[in-house]
Image (tube, rainbow, N blue to C red; front, side, top):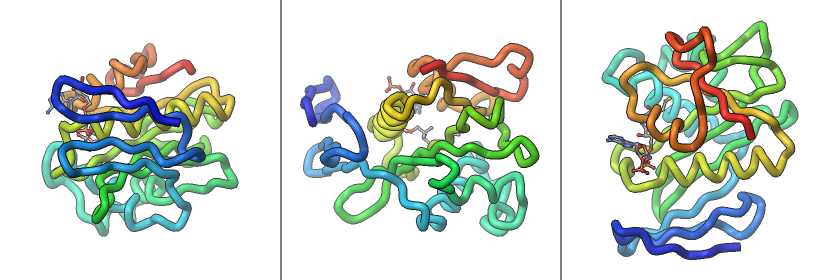
Length: 189
Ligand SMILES: CC(C)(COP(=O)(O)OP(=O)(O)OC[C@H]1O[C@@H](n2cnc3c(N)ncnc32)[C@H](O)[C@@H]1OP(=O)(O)O)[C@@H](O)C(=O)NCCC(=O)NCCS
């Protein structure tokens, strides 16, 4: 189900109803971006995304760190049996972004962990595709999916100075009292 809307920047967007439905499509010039569900076997994509996330402010960690260090490696695979899910954005020839939600256990918490019943969200867009609305569309689609699944909350963490915070705030995420220094935020669905 799509309802195109014309934005001032010339991008034609289509409403994202559900990743399970017809692919959501939007265009910028000749570029068409489609959203689809993330598959459990897409570990390499999540490694790349996690590497981009931990290095959002510059080169701090290597791909080896992401694979070998438990505080990072648990972000590199989803477990649908646990309820994890995600959305991928792709153009005709490349994957341009992904966001995903994980029910990490209390004894292996992520940086944005608040409860085992509240999935933690991560988001990444490839550098060349940033600033064109891909991140917002991915997050909106993930939120729609979470609501339709009956989830009550989503959490995440964002480091001080990351422009991603503005995106999350505009989507309704707010800081968790007492954990502001860790950048933990919560969205009530
Ligand atoms: C954060 C990220 C996923 C956003 O994806 P994106 O496709 O660039 O974001 P969008 O173009 O949809 O922009 C969404 C909002 O983010 C903010 N934003 C994005 N780029 C920005 C910039 N350069 N300066 C200021 N704000 C910016 C704006 O609030 C923007 O709102 P708008 O839609 O009203 O313009 C992407 O920049 C990224 O992957 N960054 C590196 C990894 C990272 O930091 N991940 C998040 C870890 S918490």
